[in-house]
Length: 191
Image 1 (spheres, rainbow, N blue to C red):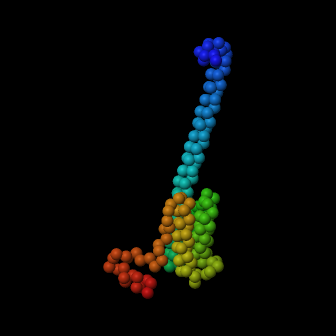
Image 2: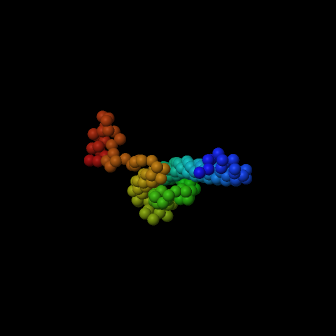
Image 3: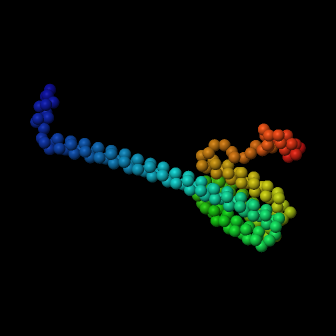
């Protein structure tokens, strides 16, 4: 058996250079691959964070404009003035501007929930104009159903954003629990 020192001394400097070059290439390939992978993961994380933050802003706008439209329609039903009708038109436009964006950037459960919310709000507006399918006589019931659709939309948004739990109040909710009005509220509200 030839000692290792003898083999190394008898080897050509070209063999050593070839091994050095091969080692450098393999090391560079590994470092480059790792760098590309880390950069890709960082980009994907940044995109995901941007989308999540953008959705939060868009969801906020949808809920804010939806509430504004609901309040405007209720006010207009009570006070049939030109100013009230203009407020409904402005709120309607603002809601449906953001509604289209929500439909574009959201997952299917939010799209479906926001669609029911939007169509119910539209029915309220159209009932004021005499063009609603259900008519003005069903306005109060549709307004209740708008509120329920809002809660369904909120819950779908919460799930999409990775938040746990429902925002819906429990059945027979009593906001006066632990106060002196709890029993009276319960009796008057639920019988």
